[in-house]
Length: 427
Image (cartoon, rainbow, N blue to C red; front, side):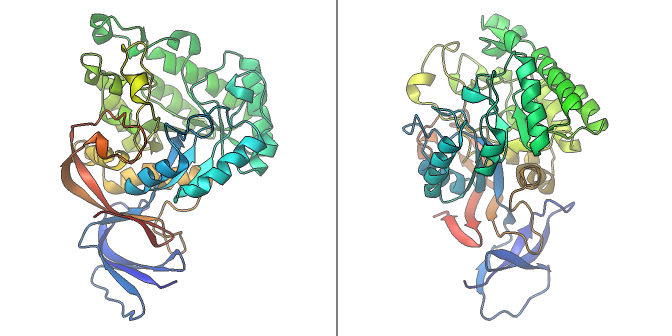
């Protein structure tokens, strides 16, 4: 494998405070050396890649991607998700088990592993925490861990059986497994299509109070304290839940939290006149909540940004708002949407990449996520300021349900590299 020298690059190192000009030498799929600006190494045998001052960062590690195999390959296959990921600068996807059937046995996990070989990016699978994601009987967490599951989650199926959840947490703790939970009080949030408030009332939409998120998190934190399990909240989207999260972290509990790019960059008013492409789960929040969550991300209280990529076809979205399916595709829009946090909210690129790449890789014990010598050379080259208008019909996902259709955005992926080898290059 020929060595590659990425030179004249703006290096986005998540472990640094600021971007810096420099160069990166890649050998045998790993970062071999990092050079500062002004250092011109003599490497006649290396392929030279002139980055033209653009940003070079670790590839994005995206937790919580829905690939619809088995059960609904027409919505998203591993192949189409992989193409979308590569075009979006995502080099590792961590898939959800909310398939049909659910990934709740070593056999279904093995099926997913074989199909994932078509993706062209790194794929790791989460498995269901309970059988059928029904919240009653826990899965064989040990066998599933041996089969390659990197975490356990029932996704948005929140159980009311707290005793069963405690047993699952206890068993996961004994095995050192990570559990990921959707923090909503299930009875309050059942049937909700919007966040309660003046907007939802004027639109006559069934709504849920932000307190449902706090109540769900409070229950889970009590169980984490009792069991000592490694825990990740998939989405913290309200100001009301942040004090609970802070107390858990201050108490030394092994807890992290994530948030979707949609909840960081959109708010409840974007739904406007029942625009179903903006229907996600949990529903979009008020602007005060959005700003509070951005600040929590800035200070590191929230650890991870993810796409929460959820393909839905036209038939399931072209319905009355209450009946329409929740979710949006986001593998290709994750990076440009994250640039809104940089250009509008003042987050530095290293701060953003800690949440996009370094923290998720560390939490799950995966490769990549940094620009250190010896790290896997999964990289994305991008122009942080390149403007464009998003056309959803050009997305590589099979489904095109994005709320960013027709919006002005900034941030273009120029090339994506897996182990130093190019897997996507913008024409």
